[in-house]
Image 1 (cartoon, rainbow, N blue to C red):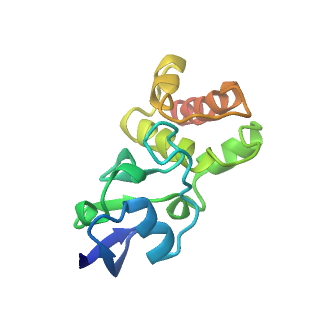
Image 2 (image 1 turned 120 degrees about the vertical axis):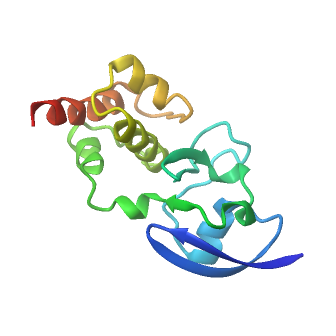
Length: 153
């Protein structure tokens, strides 16, 4: 069954017609054309498809697009100039880059809620995002680098 919905993504509103069983991930990629959000496992185990919904990380592969109507959705494209992207590059936290969008969005949610997290809090915040390349150390360093910069301001 098809349904016309309105999605607010990165501050822009999109009217799209979706099958009521279409995931938010597929709507973002196929209907809206924002391909920064990746599909990894498709079952909510890897965090690759993480987006922020009303400021909280969610796995877009587990949510129906129709259930996202009226919510504020942020994808990696909405953070094109965010300091987290620069920090990830400067600290070598990006290797293959497949997990990076989800990692950055999870980190943003953490820093928005807690501007000065501990290393343990950072590790917990990104624990739902799997990375097969970096071993997480550089990702944690990148996130903590912004924490210390904020506390010095």
